[in-house]
Image 1 (cartoon, rainbow, N blue to C red):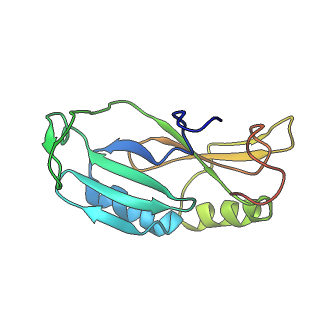
Image 2 (image 1 turned 30 degrees about the horizontal axis):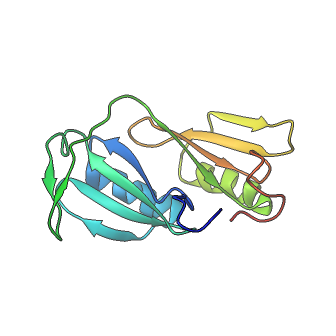
Length: 148
């Protein structure tokens, strides 16, 4: 792109809205090993590989604007219902993920072998959100080698 053009490099933050912040934080830390970056009464920010952040918001906790630590206001937001997130995994870790979910007592709701050669495992978090781990080739921009 020519200099000065507005562009995006990647998704930085993704949000889920949860009933019990402590329970959800513990789930994502335990299952995925995501380290906490920030925690307060309304939200928790967890580090995801690839310079990404998973934000867990207590449902209703951000329904009003919030003051930002450095000044300014974070606009109100909230969400209801079951949402979906997919995490990229290396191809050679698919069976390890299957074993990990079983060991954690988490039911695999579906295993999908895609025409592209990618495989996905679908399961639920404590709030019923649909989570997926998927091997490369699920999408054209998700390479043929290891997960980014």
